[in-house]
Picture 1 (cartoon, rainbow, N blue to C red):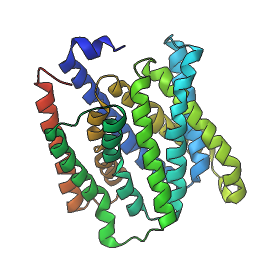
Picture 2: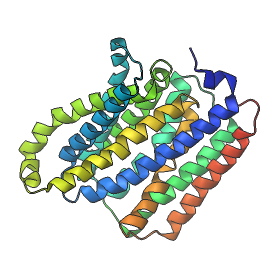
Picture 3: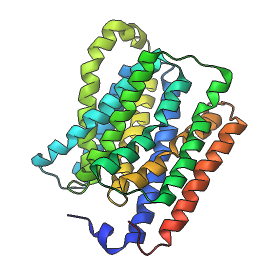
Picture 4: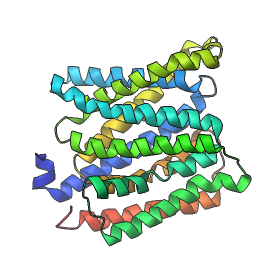
Length: 308
């Protein structure tokens, strides 16, 4: 079963899917910047619980108020949320406590490549040579954007690096499994179910985090910051995942992986705009490579009569 958008108007489907992916990448990139600022006051697991709670409530409200249909049998598709945001974000947060931010960013840049491999193996999606070349340029750009911190140092810990790799692999697995789920369930209720399962993961980890010290750290956090934390959850989780699932309805997972390389572009741009961080020349070059590769890909696909 395929949506009418996928079968009747391939070029329009690609254009809508590309727009949804750019919007999703912007939500993830800017949302990460907002979360980074909030993490200065709220410890990671507590923040994740608040973010996923706000995201889940928002998505369920939209589902109910708009009357978007789903059945109890559809709940099985929500289990992919155990991978992402569940395992992916928990492993990533814990790993970030053990390794450097630059190592975590570089490992995160591997996600599009892992998605390509999994999509080829499990979804049988062929990767055309031109896509391989453009993906190579985009990944190179991502490494330049995210790896700039290595120029000023940054030591990692193999345990933290391993956790980061587990998180990235879980996120890639989420993409492959969700590619099939979006054929059967509408994006908003699917995202709501996935976020709910992710929230369950975070709630299970919360008691351990509180015992390890988060209880004392959250005692003096003002209500206003908890509200801001909830807003970041709506942006980084509810909006980002919904647009991502909308995109997966219309484009292959390999194409979505290419657009994921935009996340660090939005991330470093947001950090420069809102947090006052310095944007290095090498990051500008990397961002240019990413944007250039995506523009070439978009022009090629949008004008093709045989868009996959």
